[in-house]
Length: 327
Image (cartoon, rainbow, N blue to C red; front, side, top):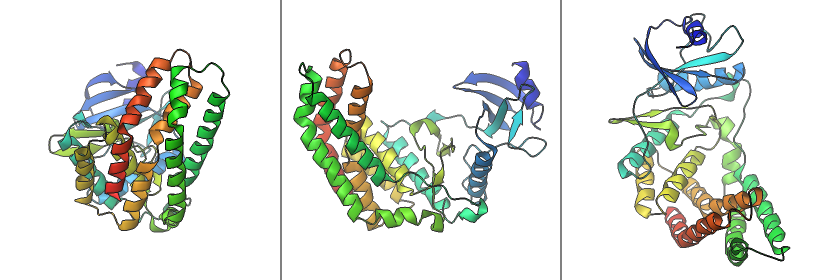
């Protein structure tokens, strides 16, 4: 191991028995279990916030998380001689959640339900500030403005490639859907639910993806809380279920596995279910493809973009059917 790591690890009260590099960090085998050593540029205030969230979870029995290991001085981060800061976290040996495994998806969703049930009542006065996730109505409106701009850009072309011709043909049905989603969201209880998360102390994970969820036998480990914030927990469910469905061509049995797993712990009320269905109705993948086209090499990416657009078109009805089922 590099000397700079020895310098940092000397500040902790565990014995390192083995170490190896992993993605952006160092995995440590110690006499107190596995740990992860990682550089950090996160502010001290943010680290204190994350530590407070993780401590709250552990105190409530949600223990399979990457808790911070405090150094011998009781600090969350440690610096080497160059001033680089590091954190050490508890870590787990398991397999990343496989989105093509019904069992993994069910376990991850059930784990999310437990996580959310324990991330309630965390009052903002404990940190003196309340930061919330971005308002999705504003996000969708911004996306719609970008879609209009991209459509107008393509229409102004004289020599259109195959992707641009196909894009203009299907644009109306996707854009109508996008506008309907914004209208439905503005008429729903979303704004009231969004505004009250600080009062109710509702926190969401913010990065509940398969990369951060490890299946460890019959248990699930939840890691990477660096985007957790006050916000509607349904956002975690939306991002997770959308990714699961996209990976499985909107096969409804995978969506049912997510919903059954989550609601085996935490039931959605009618308002939450309605908002989740609106999120799923929004053509997020079409917007992403449009943005990708606009910012990429337009002539070189035609074939790849065509394949992606064709797949989206094939899945259009399946996505709407699933959103309706959720509602």
